[in-house]
Image (tube, rainbow, N blue to C red; front, side):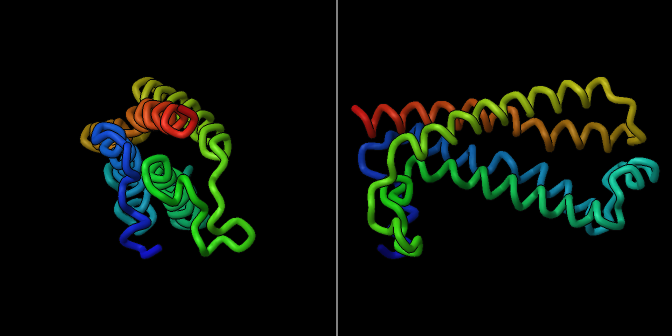
Length: 170
């Protein structure tokens, strides 16, 4: 299987599911870019006390970059619900390569992930609206704008996961 064919949508996946998976994979990018900006020294409206509390510069810098990479890696897994590597283990996985991916191996983590990121997104936006932070008005608005796409991640992942389950078990 070539790299190009590994990233094609599986036959039988409707356009809405493919688009939803792709949008879900991108929902973590804006907040990740915000965290990386802070990590490289761009305060994006945060006051010194906020940066100190985040331990930036310092270990907080590593944590911000690591969290951004981890979140995007998890979001990227949404594509597995509509692409070949979500149905047949890729050849670079020793012991599993070429075998069919058990439906539960994709559906259970996707369902738990959809629930987790939905709850996290709602709680983060709600707490941001009620937090007393050392942030400029424009910085506060930027946080809301860049974190709001996370509200879409869970519902999109959930919808694509339900379609994956129906398609693989139907």
